[in-house]
Amino acid sequence: MFDSNFSNAVNIIDKSETKSGGIFEIIEYKQPRYNGAKLRQVRIKLNDSGILAQPRDLQFMKGPIHIGTQITASNFWGSIGTGESSFTSHYSGKYGEIYLDPSFKYFYMMELLDESIILSDGMFYCCEDTIDISVHTNKDCAVGLFKGDGFKQPKLSGTGVAVLESYVPFEEILIYPLNNETLSVDGDFVILTRGDIHLKIEKSKNEGFLSVYNGTGEVWIAPTKHRPISNFNINVNPTNT
Picture 1: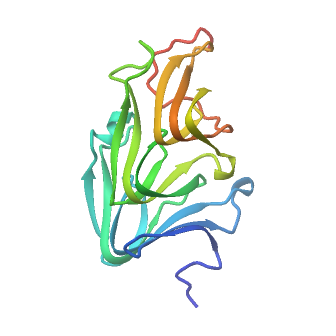
Picture 2: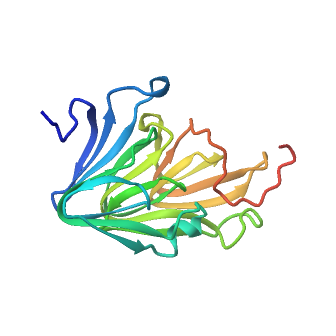
Picture 3: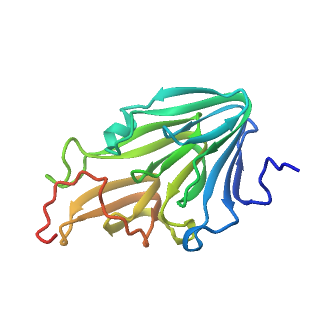
């Protein structure tokens, strides 16, 4: 018999119900692929609700779901330099089911409650349309370190469910609570800040940058993150290549 939930093929590894009765799920396929890696996917069930997602991330959907576009504040994608368009796809309907593209990346489910989080570039995946997407610009950085008018990061604000994506499993994330304290990180390892956290960016001795976080809230660090710093428009000329 056909199983629309794919219960024989997948495990539901995280789940969150929205205030409207919609459901966000992160599913993981049981069958390993390359080198034992497993595919994961975000499945959303609408209930008189809507979501925002990155353009082109839809795999398939079922039901009377309307697809539109939403221009994001300050040209969200283009301003950050991801090469993405400056809009998100908006899916809404009385009911229906949405499957976004499967990936070997890891997905984090978060529930925002009248708050804001600031993300590392490329982490936003999808969210309820009750959440506002904008660009946070930090101008408190060393002179000449960044081109343009400052260091830009995605910002999510409001109340609702959000899904983030990362190359690092959640179990390897260090969540540091700060209570009017300072945390300094040499490199591109902070993936999220939450609360009243101020960031100051300075040059470091290794020709990279030192991120100094001060305030009260949370700082999420991914120590095992190893991708090169390719998405930041940093005006630094290393002596060794």
